[in-house]
Length: 438
Image (cartoon, rainbow, N blue to C red; front, top):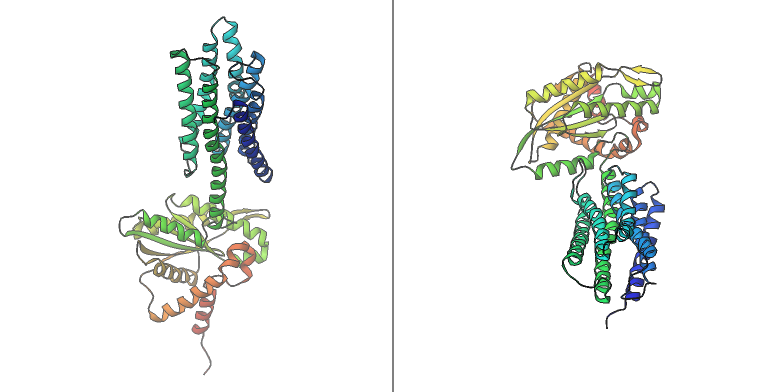
């Protein structure tokens, strides 16, 4: 047996009430996310409209004042869904336009009736007003936002608002092209069932989009150094895997490791807060100097690593020199005044798509050590893979660096009390180089 209209309206209102409660909890826990409040308002307005329609007898049209209130509520629900999409994707919301679109369905109906036109034309005007907002929402779900990856859950909303758009178009066609009664129980029941099904997709899509965005943010945080905003080692690994996956075979690339000169002295003299400011400003300068396609990582402490796809050794040397000059030529602003900073850089070449990354990092690290021993504020290019004895020493250094990396990357400049990456090897080298008494 088919459900009566009052039961369908109650089921519609109850389901929306449940979603309102869910979104209220989400909005209270994330007060700064305005789209959650807007989507909750959309569900609340639709819920209120369903409660009002429960009091309207079947196969009768509500009075004009009741009709205006219901259309305002349903129109407001569509508009809040649309503004929620815009807020979610970081697009500006025109409040004036939103208010106009919200008020339009409730104003069109009595205006057309007052002009002496038929109720069918008045209802057509209401559906046309709602159609405009549904098309706007559909557009928001399919358009792309620069710098933002598309969410899979967007397709749920695209499907739902495509259904709403089609329903409004069919309703307009039936009103204008047929003589079907406007207040039949069958048409009302069919509309309510369609609204129930589509509403589930819309509200589930809201939840799915919010959850997918939160998961992506957590993943981004796990791959990002919190102080500088650059990739951490995990992020570098993921970025390299994505880059390699997009290649057909091997691709030449350059690698550089940049180490801020005398950074421990900066911490000791100016404090760890100033050291963090230097690290942050250094990262910004590196990012602005290198290309948008380059992968930049905070490698550990005051060391930064960058992978530059598609560069020749000559281009790598030129880019490294441009980076060195950008650091040395402009002092870093601190509260105590401008601070001159220099950087030493070691470079190496590699092929993306094979196992040469570890070799290239060892080669660049050895070149960085050479730049330090030659007086700092300079660039040294790695020539060939380390020999067997150097390989053992560098392997011990890599193990030592991996063991200390979590402290240096998580605590910023405060972790500089520990020896920087490679310091144990360099200290051992200097001791071995000193003359010993017979």
